[in-house]
Length: 139
Image (cartoon, rainbow, N blue to C red; front, top):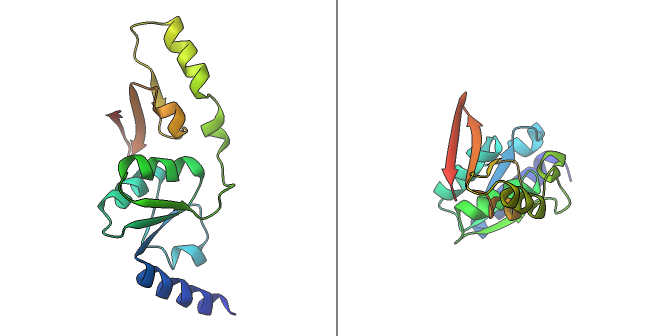
């Protein structure tokens, strides 16, 4: 099967199965050509929430799929490669964050969006840089 034939089959299946394909900007052009949206992690999560499809396929890393699920809890979110991870997202875990909150009571815990869903659950604010501005949302 050629790449084009495979892409055509993917496009056919995504329509048939009501799937929205999100591709992070670092994916290859072959993946971009079948994706509904291409962008950064936060932008893709916002697109997932707006997409009419009931299933989202994330072509990126685990924290991106988790963020899609946070913003679209009613949708089924799949990760194209279940082993795809991000070292940045693993720099601090939930337990370490809870220790920091305990050591500094009364101070808000802020994390960058490139973190695990588990860590986001104990943060007070999550920030992202999008289009040269800092954005935040409170969980």
